[in-house]
Image (cartoon, rainbow, N blue to C red; front, top):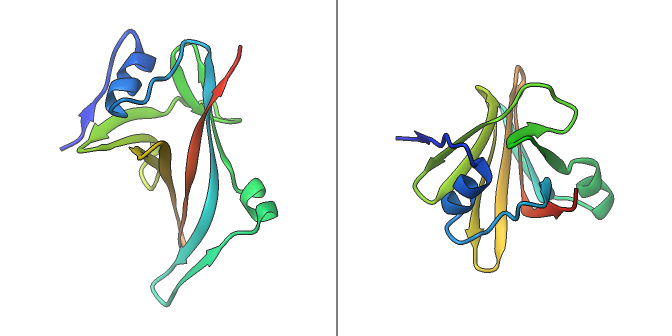
Length: 131
């Protein structure tokens, strides 16, 4: 069962959820660079490794503004939850970013449901510093 992480200090809460990943107070957000894209529908599933240009085009950006997380360009804040060893940022049913610490890196999955199927990106997430 997912636990909603609510706190006056969501950055600290996120650091705890990531089990040892510390999000500094100077963080501006998170940025994920996908390595793999999976397209699925009722008829078929395709997996492909992305080129650098494709990875740059499909990167996920999360802005940290006044202690709240937003997908870049969105006005609705993301919900921060944790379940098991994973942390989730979600804005609506069918769209989420799931991440966890794996060795010295933060791995992530971005999943988006669409009427025709879904798209899932797998990659590495980094913390964007500076104010």
